[in-house]
Length: 539
Image (cartoon, rainbow, N blue to C red):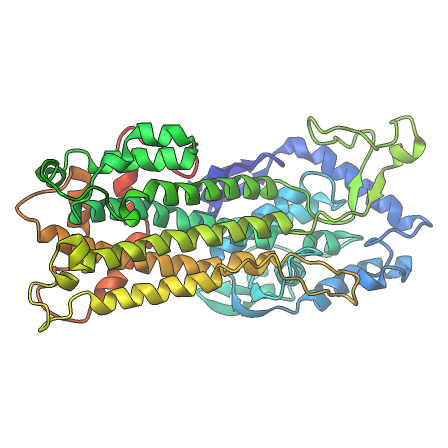
C-alpha cells in the first residue's frame, strides 16, 4: 500500500518534507482547505470580468504590466506566459527536487491566497502521485519574481507541451500524461502567473542540500572521534562543564555526542596517565566549538526553509474577504472591515513575497557550515600524517620513503577544502537587474542552493580520506581497542576498504568510503547510539 501524506496547507513539517524528498508517496490536500481555495478563485473570476486593471489577471507582466489585455485573450495570456518563460538551461533537476517542487507549489496554492481553481492543485498532485517527473533545467532563476524559468518548465509539462524525465532521459509529456490518465491542464486567469511566481525551486534545492548534508555532518562526528583516538587525543575537552559555560546549543550537543562515541576506549585509558602533551591541536579539541557552530547554522536554515515551504510566495495575492479564511492567528491589520462591500468582493494586492532572500541567506550560511566541516577535517588529516604531532609513522605508512602512504590523499583533501572556500562565497550579495530594471534587486537563491551539492560531495570525500587515515592510525595502536561505536566504524570501513600495507591507488577506497559517508551508512553508527537526539531536529 502506498504511503500517504495529507498536507495541511501552512503546516508542513520537516519530517514530511524529508519523506517527500526521500521516496515516492501519495499526497493529498486536507479537505478543510477547499473553502479558502474556492473563495480566492472567485475573486479572480470577478476581477477577470471587471473593468479595473489587475496585474497578472488582465495585464502584461513585469515591465509590460501597464499593457491591458482584452477579456478574450486572458487564457492565452497565461499560456503564453508559460511558453515564454520556459527558457532554462543546464542539467535537469534531480527527481527528489522536482517532487518537492510539486508538493510545495500545491501546498502554497492550497493556502487560498493565489486565486487558482482547485483543479490546478489537483493536477499538481496527480502528476506527483503518478510518479511523473517534469524535466526542469537547473539554471535560469535569479531568485526573484519567483523561480520563473524552472517553474515554467514544471508547468509546461502539466500543459502537455513540455517534457518529463524518465530513467534519466527526456520524454514528451503529453503521451505520458495520457497514459497516466491525466488530462493536460488548461489555464484560466492568473493561474499561469500563480504557478511560476514563488520560491518553490529555490526552497526545494535548499531542502535537498540540507537533507543531503545531514548524514555527512553526522559522519563527521563519528570520523572526528575516531581521529581523536588514532592520535591518542584527550576526551577532556568534551567535558560538559566546559560547554555549559558557553551555552551554545550546537556546541553542547556535539560535545555530548563525542563523549558518547569515545566512552570506554582502551586507547584513551592507555595514555590517561603519563602523557606529556598538555593540549591537543585545535582540530581535535575544538571540534564541538567548530562543528557545533555549523550545526546551529544548519538548524536555523531548517527553520527558515520549513517556514518558506509553508509560505505563500506568488504575486499578486488574493484576499477573499468574508468566507475567505485568513491564515489562523494572523492579524487583520490593514484590511478593510468585513462590512465594506469592496472587502466582501475581495482584494488583490501586489507585493514581493516571491523575493527569495530568506532562502538565499540560509543557503549562504549552509555553504559556510559545509565548508567549515570539511576544513577542520582536512586539518585533522594533516595532523595524522605529521609524525611530529600524531606520533604515528610518517604519512601513516610503516615503510616511509619507499612508500608515500597518505601523502597525496591529503593533497586531494586540501584541494577539495580549497574548492569549498571559493564555493562558499555568498551568492546573496550578487544582484543583476532584470526585466528592463523593473526587477532591480534579486536574491540569486536558486544558485545559492544549487552550488551546495558539489560542496557536500567535496566534504564527503574529505571525510572519506580522514576515515581511511584514522582507521590506519588505529591499526598502528593495536592490540589496543577503541570504544565500541568507534570499533564499529572501523569495521564498517574495513568491509569495503582493506588496510594500506603498501602503496597502491587510494582512489577506489576514497570513492567507496565517500559513498558510505554520503549514503548515511556512517551516520547510522551515530543514530543507533541510545540516548542521543537527532542532531538536526534537536536543540
